Image (tube, rainbow, N blue to C red):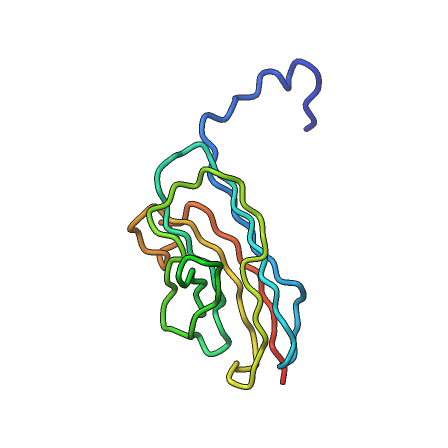
Length: 146
């Protein structure tokens, strides 16, 4: 059913808006020696509560490369680990941010197979592993071939 004229004026106005996140890769399939570009977009919602932000890659072997801010100068994907680590902790989302946050070259130590790039926001201190805690989430899949 389509709404027309005054019917549109009777729609309820949202009183709260969740934050928005998006992650992309520059392509869906890679070969070793090729570069991955990882852009992320984060936009605030109406809540001002601090969040923990997780950005990274889940590798074909199940390990995770988490985005880190070494020395607070730029970002880089860290060494493989068993669980995601926050790139930002207890930080309010009060700006609209969209940028490439990491570039990496696929190497011989990267297992071939499916990868998932992700961005997740949770309330500060909550687990990013529990979907019930997610305030905003996005993921995109790609493949690394030999």
